Image (tube, rainbow, N blue to C red; front, side):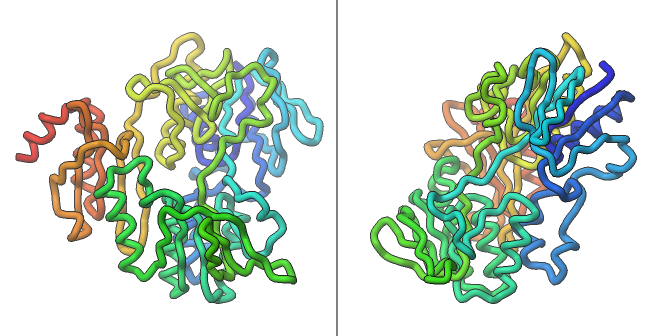
Length: 397
């Protein structure tokens, strides 16, 4: 293998490029990145970038020492087609890059509400350009910020806005934040966290549309019950969709992402990593994971898989992520469902310092923690070892 194309210059793609060099690959690496900015780390965009005195202080490189990796860049270019047989990536300017291997790390795009395009003051938050635009509107001291969606991005934006002293409303269609993945006691705690910081929570409430002023700026959001909540800034945080449209017709299997085998291989000489990859996890089945840690580890694993030829090991991590909201660090490891059992092993939800086990059918499925990173990491290792629910409960006793 003498040449590799990496499509995507965010964390997973840059981690793949870095790993290729660390593993001794000395051939040509072309990195295609749609954004014009230097590769950067996304987590600060919803936190320190919005709250710090100088937002540029929050912009961190995706990986260190990028200039030492000897990469050939196609920055500000978009991949529009893939020829799997030739491992050829076609760009939006007509260039065709042929390589011996391809890493698909093209990420995901923020979902949008219908009818919001062109309305000033309505934002999504996925890229540095998104963060710049949102920060500019927050610096103008809006009377109210309305956040659509109480997932982790929406919750972090709400917390950052409250830290700035701005009035905030969260509108969430589900009965509680994160209630698709967290059992009710944990989801209810997440809702109460925002209420105690004076966030106006509108749960079990859908959005009918966005109201605008005559000059084209947002004036508020019309809810499904007909109520209009006035807001000068609206942030839509309703999840992301994997960037796979450009791969249609390529012959790859596309189903909520690029479908891979357990080793991250999507086709001979083609691997996928990060938010765009949906792979056959030995423990959880077909999954797509949108967390920072997964992008880091999967980017590295996919690079090694590409170099391994016919041999390759399964990528089988325990998914894990964190979210900083107010003075709380929320962490979750594993794959959970709302009907799972919950058992608190350290602290309490009332105290806001807690570690809780999550399980079902005799199996430990996840660990939830707030401001207890060290004990959560111990339980995370036990979860990876496959400890059973009864054994876990016995350790608590």
